[in-house]
Length: 88
Image (cartoon, rainbow, N blue to C red; front, side):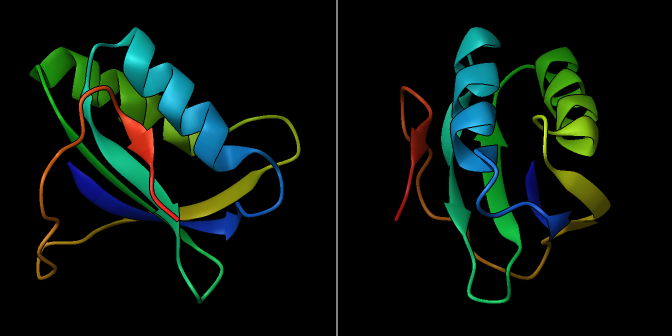
């Protein structure tokens, strides 16, 4: 899964939230802030775990307001980190 999460997703602990949930789900990958105010998430693992993470992204942590989750089909994601990490 490689997505951009849009809305109020920076400055609310969103990257930390994603990292912790992804690790609980035993996923590899990373999360990072983008210059346009969105958050990019790249995750690899079992299908059910990826679906669960996507549902968690829709809600986000307290204080977040997700308006859209867009697939990043054109971008090269690079390598998945294990354990799941935060890129700066």
